[in-house]
Length: 189
Image (tube, rainbow, N blue to C red):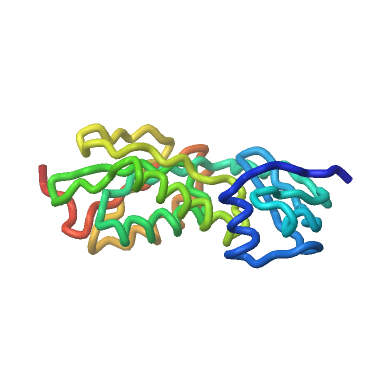
């Protein structure tokens, strides 16, 4: 067993205030490579911003055989946040927002990017999905590229989910790109 000790104001606040964990409680800490089960010690309540405990178990994160890239329209904030939350829980590798002619307002700034990162981390925590997707900066629709073994476009009026399931169960792909348009759809151009 190894001792874990570090200073992190945000994590300490999340453990003590949001999760309300205390001495003896266990928490899973993770990054893109490894996840650790840590039993917290009394230091969590004695010293502000200090996270410490004993590592009870450690495990390398499982890498998926399939890389999923999701091209997602930069929709309204609430809808986009819900979208990235679900995508992170499902194991999407890369989320690439795009802007098209049907998107009326560009709201993406550094502050929103940081918020989206936190949302994805929370989603991964909830699903015990230890690999957080890479969130790219928005691009114009003309920069969207079909780079995968299989590229699937979700279109209104077509049962794209059936197509996706059929394709994924019948063939072995290493990289799949998924794309759907904004609420107003994509223009003919």
